[in-house]
Length: 487
Ligand code: GLU
Image 1 (tube, helix red, strand yellow):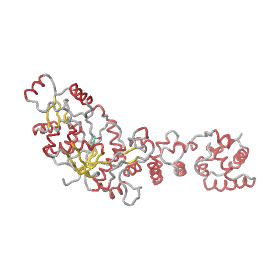
Image 2 (cartoon, rainbow, N blue to C red):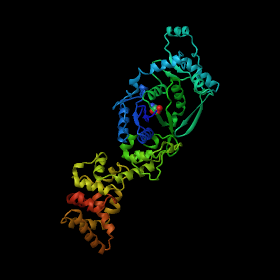
Image 3 (cartoon, protein in one colour):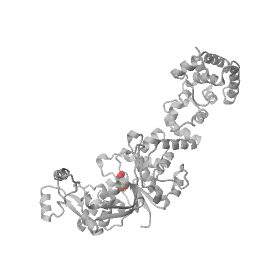
Image 4 (spheres, protein in one colour):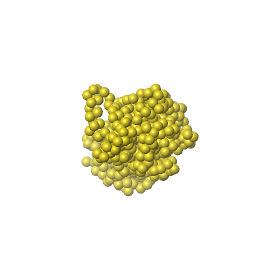
């Protein structure tokens, strides 16, 4: 195969998981690096677990991450349709070929019969493999079973394919990430490729689709390794060229268990809702298995694509360090230009009436509050005092700051003097300098003076630059709040 063609083939049984995002990214990078094509295929054969909302989520998340596909359900392409449920008429044809070649056979066993086989295996403490009871049914026997109303499933004949293509009973392939992988296929059992209801199973549909879509390299999670052995035999049985495979280590939570909801967000859209930037997320996810040759971890996807080599992907598991993601996200927030940041913060300011601030005021508010943001949603609790006429005073701020005699003196003097001030930042800066000086002469530290003002105006003892805050709020609001704090 000359052209590099890779794919991501999510099953829409949930929102796009960060693990799938990483697999998609590595495929995307591999395609970019090799001037290849990146294909999106939706594997929705399991109708019960599939929903349109998940499909939309997968599309939106991949797009938000910048992982745009060259061919897929929405953009089409030469090898469509790219949604498995629209391909159901394709699979029986290939199952028929396998039947004719003797690499598959019809199985009439009922669920009850199969259950019984499993129970026997369990009782004998043996791993269950199908008994092959239906392997050699005669045409008469099959006709008889059909007449009884039984509908057959189709099973792949592992031993036949194994013997035909790998007489040693061991199957080996050279994994792009993990090196040589081997397996004795005796233990697989003849698995179903077409269910009795006519639906293909995953292992069969995926081979037919990858084959017809001319996928050259299959890069996916190592949880699929045992499937790969089965799939290789199907390719061979069909006389098709076997693609190259690369299996990525798993992504584990910091406690080394499987990453799940109890550790925090796991879907890309959840991270976005929490205020993670997709640029940070994709950069972070790239580092789960890949490391930059120059050691510089903050790298946009384009730069990663230049540096990416599939053979250098770590074959071991990666730990999803939420702390590291936070660090990276705060870094990406710092790199945003102010206009972009203003837009991105808006969803997290929905509980405030943004129309209270004009554009210049909003810009200034973002400028003075952006520094400590780790995730965009941190803004919500950082800015309540920029909105509303009055302000909520934290209880300890009331007792420990506002109720003191010193603070009361400061606030009375401030209320008196500030009446005559212009509330632009430059002027406030000068006036406050003088104001603090006056109190310093009375033995009050400048810090204490400012504390009193901050407490009255913001209800807090810590926050954004005070002069800028006063200027944004304007004289009316500031004086109202200060008067209110005076006993
Ligand atoms: N639909 C499968 C999954 O989501 C695809 C696996 C594969 O890449 O072959 O796990």
